[in-house]
Image 1 (spheres, one colour):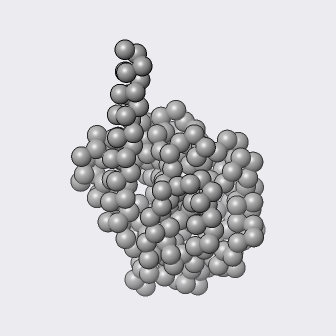
Image 2 (cartoon, helix red, strand yellow):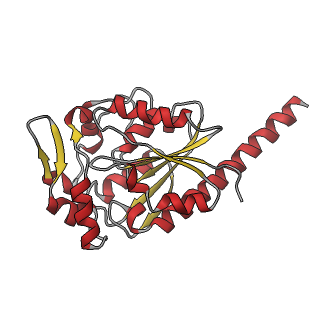
Image 3 (cartoon, helix red, strand yellow):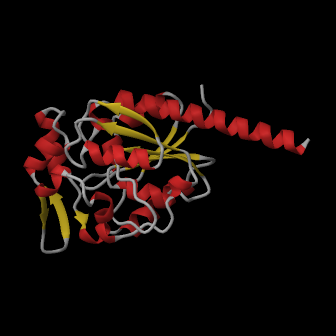
Length: 243
């Protein structure tokens, strides 16, 4: 079993840290140290700051996991020296200088038609968007709860841009829901291909951590083992050079 045990989970738009509530106990049962970030969703900068605070609270290297919009967040926060790897879960994968708008440009993002803007400059997702685009493979009662507890997403967050894409210097993985009706499978696959990420595809909606938490937790476990092996190999090379 891997000794690489620090995981920071980052939620996306219209959500909070409880997005990972079914994954967290599975990871903890396997000895992982887990923190789910509570992003304010007020700006990309604010969300990166919240994520960096969580990374700082961990002792040792971290696997940084981001869902949906949090792909933007982990791409920037992933430059923290304690981050050893990135996992994009049905997530945006931006490049240097890109905003949310740049990432989704040219792709069909089905849920976008269900965004609702209030007078304060925040977006929410309509009931139809939750039921048909966001979490259509969850039971109706669970979808209703997601709609009721959703966290508004500031328009300001959509315009924030990436300074330096961490996937250029960190090993990266991707998890794609093949029935993702929020960002769309085409966008997710394009992002994974762009960064040459090791990829797992699941027959899930945009929220596999809620519909298939066991599969998501197992994938995180596999990634941690790969990071551990990589760290051991690197150490062996450094020691051989030192000799």
